[in-house]
Image (cartoon, rainbow, N blue to C red; front, top):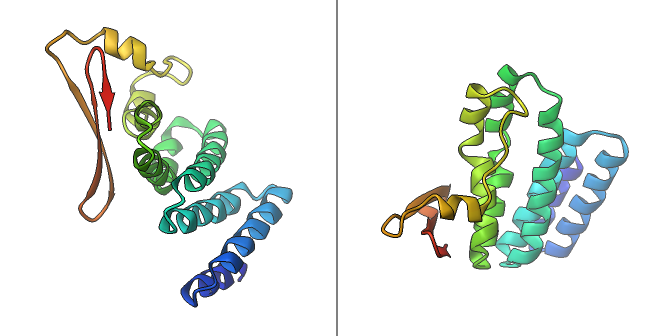
Length: 171
């Protein structure tokens, strides 16, 4: 009910009440260890800041939603992780887009690793068998004439493209 109330506030132009309602709601969920509900509320709050073009604040909340998702994933069996993760992509996509809007290419690269290839890796390699590659490690694997391109889809016609060479990164 409170989530619907927050959306009603937003749709009627009272952005501050909408944000405050989501803040209270997510705090209430966290206090009761309802992490899935908290993640949804925090993700929705992040989008409110995103739509206000406050990308720094949006990234903070998206990151919190991602942290909750990551904690929940740790307790799942490997066969359940893919389905769970597919339902939680919104926080990753919002975080990538918010960071891209701030031109934080290195952070975009790190989140794109979490968002994209990890599900495949987790199915091929046992849990705990691989660590994310750092940007420096990845760049050192590229020849001077090579460029890697990573992309993340956000919405209709919106894409974040990160290019990495052995000596630069751009978003």
